[in-house]
Length: 307
Ligand code: NAP
Image 1 (cartoon, rainbow, N blue to C red):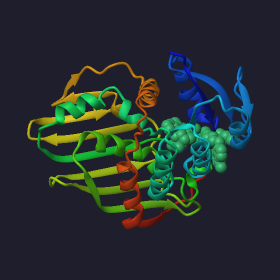
Image 2: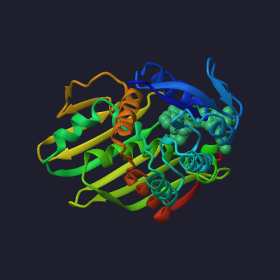
Image 3: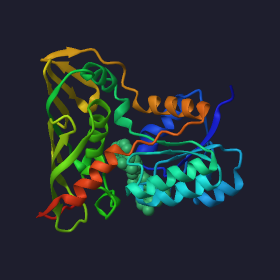
């Protein structure tokens, strides 16, 4: 079968680190264009504006939107209106309502919308889900601490309203939690916001599972040195620890084998499958948890952040 022509929009860190290499490796997609105001991709047609791309390249059936969540909305609306299939980087939008509107628009236009959660494609997430299935969860502890200067160098949008702050990585943990455990809801949240920013640099959440277990989450963007992306699930059958963002797993201290790390290969394989079946895949559960944390969270002012 011929590869689907795809364009990548928003050529920044994640587009260059992951999307362009994964598309190049994928037999299912062929990169046909790039759309970015300040960047170019060699070897394909480049546009600075998505409207010009949509007008001039009706042959490109799919777009991969890698711009930050706020400016991404209008790009998604335009692409769906033009009848293109759309892949959204995480988080799928700046609000729950706007993503629900995109779902309705995709349905109306008869095209595929795929809201990706890359951490769900980490090698040990599906094995963890299978191991937990049928077991009773007693408690979950999430510790997600990383150095914002290392992972988001010079990015201003993360500190602006709608930029998510520390929930930009924190939502990855929540995307794993909502894939491996029964539904949870937020019961309490503290958001530590630098006095010169509009989004939190750290957050502590308490959540409760519908089956009664408690979840604590500690998100912090100020961690230098070793980085921590860990989820500890205490069950009636032992302690499951997912480490390194879901790429390592142990049960009661014993390491379990994981597969090769290929989150974005998994994403593009899934997108190809969705295009073949004509189905969309949009799970809003992680975004709703972040939205609820902002809704009931108590804000604490902390020291100004300087990049
Ligand atoms: P980034 O480096 O800032 O790149 C985003 C690109 O989008 C920019 O370079 C910019 O390119 C374009 N853009 C269009 N409109 C924009 C606007 N109004 N403000 C800022 N940029 C705009 O960001 P990123 O780290 O790649 O993150 C993009 C998305 O990927 C986010 O949703 C993030 O959560 C997700 N993600 C990031 C990582 C990571 O490690 N950084 C990992 C996984 C997922 P032009 O100026 O050329 O238009």
